[in-house]
Image 1 (cartoon, chains in turn red, purple):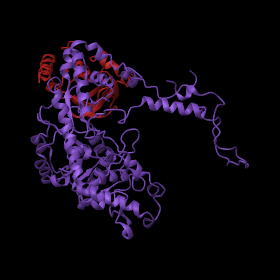
Image 2 (cartoon, helix red, strand yellow; image 1 turned 90 degrees about the vertical axis):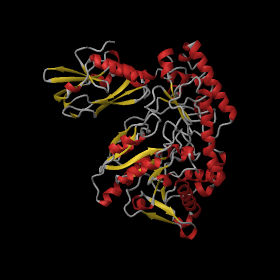
Image 3 (cartoon, chains in turn red, green; image 1 turned 180 degrees about the horizontal axis):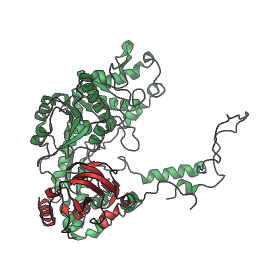
Image 4 (cartoon, chains in turn red, yellow; image 1 turned 135 degrees about the vertical axis):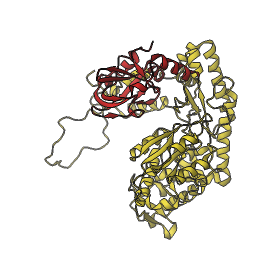
Length: 127
Length: 477
């Protein structure tokens, strides 16, 4: 899968899609591929505050449980509750299956663009 | 195999108790309208049901069980014989201490031995499992700082290779978990540790040797740094089997520890155990220990409450009969036998690792302690065979799989811990099985990904089971 050019990416493998005053956050194709089949997601609640680089939820695959790290700061205005029953949507369409929508966000400029992220993933794989 | 509900036939129940011959008068309280739908089955059928279940289960008595970080060593029958004596079984925890002198002596002696082994001053046997031992230790650390009036210290530092219970216990005890990185040798990154230490540090939790089977050579430097920052050092005894009788946590800077009697001390592990995770500490933490502790022997035997106790974690003294088994194990092995356990546990792990490292990529290419970790990322990428597939293939050789996908810092991890109780022949058979699986990975990977074929149930759909678990019987179906 090609990482969409219009999104921004974090080194902890989350993506951010800015739409006006709000931003959607999900995990990348590479992240879902590494985690394997997802079976459970623990979501934050509306009004929760995200802090850059701090976990705001966790996600469980048949292999392990992993934190979802906030790529930007902001306040949660909506969570994708469909994922509670169908976490596999993240495996199927990682760039459609957003996890949270945030407002009053900050830190998008510090994120990677698609080609920088692809390079980062390649470097990480080579290590 | 049929479920017990599927074997049930209405009216086929058993009559163990005679019908009641006195008038039944129940108080006027809400009662259930219909009888519970318990399975109705004859004693003969019931016996067969559980015998069939037992045959499908697998334990350390069935074969090699190298489940990493679990120390699935053999549990000697002599422990059972000793623990089943009437003097230990036909008692009650509310009996006065002077009527159960033998039992209080067991507790007192075991505490002395375990303190001698670990370099601690006191030990509580209340915790019923390792994680509860951790929780006890962390609450003790919290109570210690609260007592000192130092309310600022709310962070527990834990390396990224730790067992998942460490951050979980710290969070349960109300601490903030601060993770530190491992370096390329599998040990703590000292610079990262230094950068995370502050006046907020309550303590460090460390397993040593750690989950990648490596003894942290900088351990005295690590505990010194934590103490300098004002924190305490907690030793997770999960991997004590590698160093028992050789290294004492208390001598390398640890203030408080827990042990797993069901790992290192040969008491039953798995199948409900029950477990026992005694928490030991240095003298300055004694006042915070939980519950009441049996102290002294003979006429001096009495129960003691800590002055500023954190409270009780379980009823009374914990799993007493497990303590009897652990004491039996220690007395039978003796002072010379105990270090030998560690030597052989380390030797066995290195033996397997050396015989496999030409074909199985090892996460850290160095002498290991009681366990080692393979990282099978290469097989996954090149042959589409995962660590899970290798684990499943081992089942066809009558070997219980190693721990999979742990520690998290190693991709496609398999963690192998043979323990000291296995013979050279068993280790050679396991090595041959691993090598044969490797041949298949190279020549016919489909055979590996289709395994196991010889078990009562073949490959399970783990994803379906995790996403849509069926946890109760549907009577209407």
